[in-house]
Image (cartoon, rainbow over all chains, first blue to last red; front, top):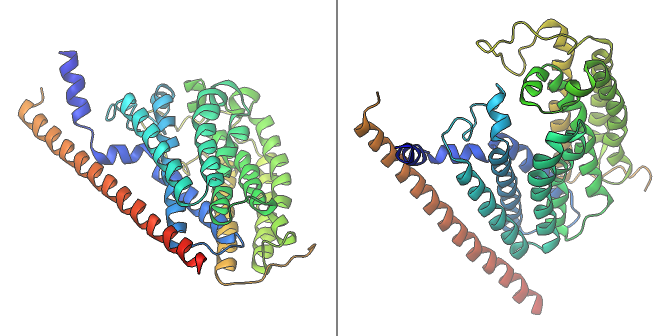
Length: 326
Length: 49
């Protein structure tokens, strides 16, 4: 009887449920940053091969998302934000998510290697393994530095895009990686300041759960101070033009202002009585005390999007980089 | 109690949708490999002359 029930639920999984396993929203961010890396590379790539490279990176990112959802089903079931995902909600079986993740990983890496080059394929394979094994299976459940170190997986797509176009990964490609890497801690910690109850319930050692809100706010400020110079740096290395310098500097000032306000606030200090199981609220729907965390979280998304969009636009329009130190 | 007949119909619809998605994915993969082969062959042939 149990077998029959299992078979029925397995049969009822729709293709849209499997698509959800690939985390389409994360995938779109990965595509955007990888495309920027591909376009910024100083080598003209065949448009068809460029599109195949971006497809491989997107599918690889989706595969690592499926592997993450397979392994983290127990955690996801305990958190409001993730309990509706296909595996914890019972729409898709864990084994099917694992199979999809492994198959898509192999397809994306092999196609990248055959169509573009094996450096890009190797970097893609490393990214998938790093996210699925190092971050998901190890860091996430073990250390409060989980998203700091694990952020490397999310930071690598522009390097893969660059490598796919040019066959190498010079300093400027790693500078794009460094921007996302340094951006990740303030971005996620700002979010976790007003969702820390969820992480605590699931036993995930996010920074506010382990070190407390005050320490988290301090670390957000420190990482923000490190982030802004890294974001401005491409203007000095022959990568960014005048528009990029303006956006990175002005946006950086706003970022620092919001990080300072958050540092001075009491965001995350107390549990939010409004966020109950009956009325969980959205990512941007927070109580007044946590508004500073919400503001930094929202602006961090805009800042990263603007940085990469400006770089992309400058390179597509042929704007000469500043090369202030070159 | 849910209706077993309705559940079977839903499962059949879901299975058909999955089968079509897999078919589309495999055909797309075959087309991509073919196009990539042509593009890379063309570039290599052009390099010889």
